[in-house]
Length: 307
Length: 251
Image 1 (tube, rainbow over the protein chains, first blue to last red):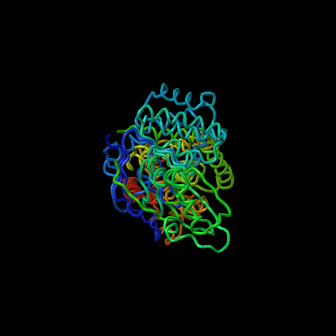
Image 2: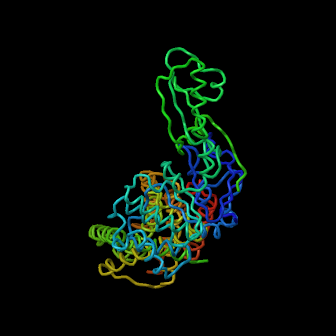
Image 3: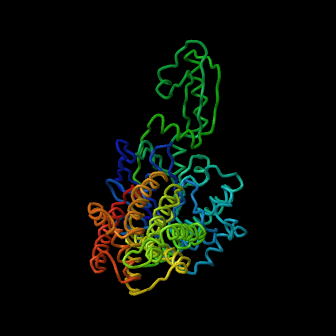
């Protein structure tokens, strides 16, 4: 698999804030890649560096082999960015907006492709409407359309579904999935973890400007095993030392990660032997949220060499 | 290569043309009011350079309106797109900072010329005008519009809020353009203020522009064009350096 986006040792400071503290990532062509992290983790800064909106203090970024600073024309031609903020130019209609955006990329007579994007995003009826008169969801779709006018091989979506209704979200994902299926590399940042779990094949988690986890979604889920067991013990009986080593405690609730359900019975037996009485017990399938919380809270740093 | 420049220029022209009632119509009306009031009061009393006051005033009003609107065009476009965030649409594409500069300045200049032409068309009926040297007329309005469009870019890039931009406009651009010989010949001023006026580049724009109509001026037009060209080069170099550094646009 050839590399679509290479990020190496990127650092960025804003005053005393270290927004990016040496981020390295490689994203392969055709990947659906997720960038997760809490607010302020550096996701948007990283994307802004990639898009040339922010200049990194150190490090290098390339898009399809083109350096985003040294060879910015070629790099930007290959990148489509859907910004996080719902921005629009109030002077123009949807079609004017898309024609102008095409011209910026050196594409004239782009109406066939523009019509196709409009149809796919369900915007055809609004083509000649002024941007000011569109609803928030419609404006969001135009932002997606604007990022696609120059048919970029790499598409970056910065929290594209924040504040978007369910129906539009579904439609949007269907369209983005198809683009990915057609060979576009898609990079997504999102707060909706179930969305990342459903869409992204590989995920990087950022915390305080650092990559704290980088793996396939499947491996990340597997690393935190198949099941999470939470239990509360009655009385003041201590957990046997052998079990304590395997568990984490938070507010009187002990959490175990089980690779398979076969591990459950021996664990309960050990508790019985240790004289523990279970007051409350919950068993759940590990999802990306558990992984995310685990990585963020415990700082389980595990960087794998990118494939 | 030039497609970014062309499209950005087209976008900038379309932007003000869509609201031409405010961006061209309003300044033309303002200039007409100035002419009607001042020439009503002063016409029978004053002659400047042997020209009736109304006729003397018209070229001044034409280029003053052109300069102020050139400044307004680039500065308001930039601050508006910065405040709303839509500036990303011109920062994401492969447009070089030189193309970026040229598009905003040429658009500002063209709006200035358009407003100037509008002012000329509505005022020329009120006083006898001559067009002794049209090439000077054109040259000074183009260079002056370029300077003001460039200053507008600096202001638009620097300002984070509309009131900062208004400050720049009201406390710098307005005095520079009003106190530059639009309404009088600087020879009518006390010596000290004559000296001060000679440090105002707008004075040379207006003086040279007016020479194109009447063939008389406070300063030889060749000298004025030298000052104005040097000013344009200086502010352009400063603006290009700002854009190149990414100041306030690419952090």
